Amino acid sequence: MLIGEFEHSLDAKGRLIMPAKLREDIGEKFIITKGLDGCLFAFSIEEWKNFEQKLRTLPISNKDARAFSRFFFAGAIECEIDKQGRFLISSNLREFAELSKDVIIVGMDSRIEIWSKEKWQKCDEDISAEEIAQKMEMLGI
Image (tube, rainbow, N blue to C red; front, side, top):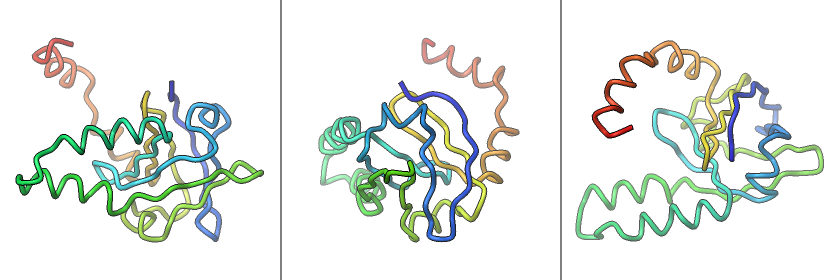
């Protein structure tokens, strides 16, 4: 299970250290793609295959379904962790997520989210656990 919040810095080449606590679950090779809310999503190969299967069930005749699939597949890249525990984030994905130096890596159970520190702090400030809990109650949680 991928959990926890970790702060790291991108190096000059766009490499980021994968926290040791997440490495075992994400694997040596994994997929990074554009995520929702302005972050990046990282999936283990197994979780990516599960996600792919869900996207494949979307009707190709539906414009929103095509756009949703395109969003995730077009930006996806396979990453590999090097001997120093680093992986390279492509320039287009760094640009999408506005990653410059300080980065927050968040374990989200079946995926990792990679945020610019500034965006994460804003997102974290905007979270009202009480308001969200009320909305989740309507969903049966």
